[in-house]
Length: 317
Image (cartoon, rainbow, N blue to C red; front, side, top):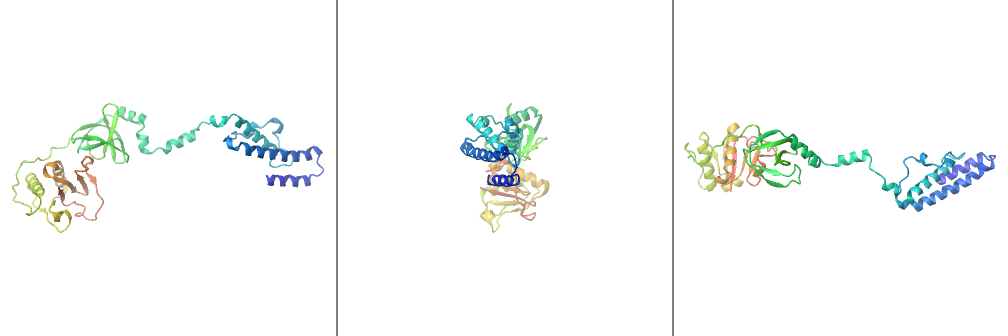
């Protein structure tokens, strides 16, 4: 307000011969401005909001600028009186405020991708439009959502035909459960074709291979079962000077390509009977502890052998 007062003093000197009414208007404007400031201090705590358009709220008597004043005190006073009118209703203006379209859009943007796909309206639409059925290639865990807050609610067996919605997020696909609800399973384990039957236990090893004495009984079981189902494989690596191999609870089955996948799946399918803890092949791992998640990707270790592309690694209990 000091600057406005300075401007008025300067203008008064320049127009010293102005009519008396104009000269008087200057001090009155100062008093009005001071009153407005005082009134503003008294009403600030109400939380009232100024009108959207101040010009619309001005009384006719003070709608024009005061001569010689670049920031009219009349405008200040009218605006303050208008704010006081809003304040008298106990915050009437604030109570009537409704978020505009921009604010509503902003709130929608704040929703995470997971929250958006889980909105009831979105789920109902996904269930209505679901028309494709696929086979599970592994036993898969059922999750409540694709996010990190997901809860496991059960499992679906390998070879089951499930109705899919086509929605996929964060490494999981949505399937329909019942008539109205959905669940999420790990992506990559749904197929249009039913999985082929895997070799089963029961046959005997006939190719003359064996494993070193002193390994665990479960390693012997793994060798005998794989040898019987895949008699063309002739090399099995057991004892080595590091980790689980040194303990006699791990074996490397030297095989690669498509047959390597068949061997890995065979061992995984019979993990319970063979006492298997986990299997690694082609930079992917399956474990009993996280069996419902299927085969999981692994970080790159630098070479074909380190990434298990030229052998199937099996660790037993």
